[in-house]
Amino acid sequence: MTRQAPPPRAVQRFVWTLSIAIPLIVTGLYLIPPAEGLSEDTLRQVYWLPRFNALLNATAFCCLAASLMAIRRGNVARHKALNTTALALSALFLISYVAFHLLTDSTKFGGEGPVRTVYFVILVSHILLSAVIVPLALFSYARGLAGDIERHRRIAKITMPLWLYVTATGVIVFWMISPYYPY
Image (cartoon, rainbow, N blue to C red; front, top):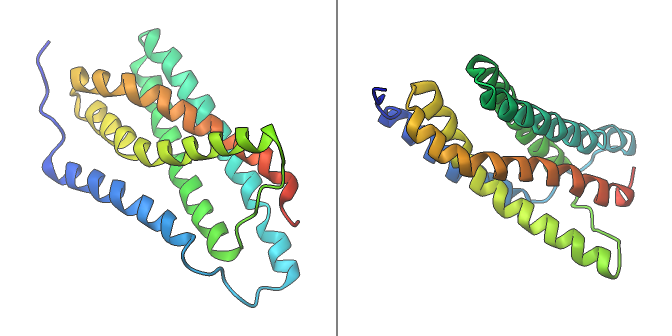
């Protein structure tokens, strides 16, 4: 098997730019106040976004799991299509997540006792790994597209379980915080 060239430098720069910009943007959401002057009716309408985000994460999880099964069965075309879909769903999630947090105050978790500890362990691990998964997923995807299969496989062995974890815990965090949303 001949080894393909790694992704071009422009792709590498793009991946690293996104990998730095996305966590900075998400962190910035917590440093700037939400939009002011929104009516109660508008706020009620905005609160469908967390449910939508959970649906995006759940669907991305299913795509990733199916992608893993497809590649284990040797179906490269299906694997590629499912990973492309998972990446698109994750990008849509990010846009929706940013929009929601630009418009609303952060919701505080109201649980007490051990469930509070469980929630924060899941939340913190989800947040940290969601920053890590950006370059991993993008480099894994770019290497697969470029035909650099050996390097794609190496990084995918790390990327896939982490990406599955991030998408699954995104849904779990939603389930745990949703009773505390004001609408």
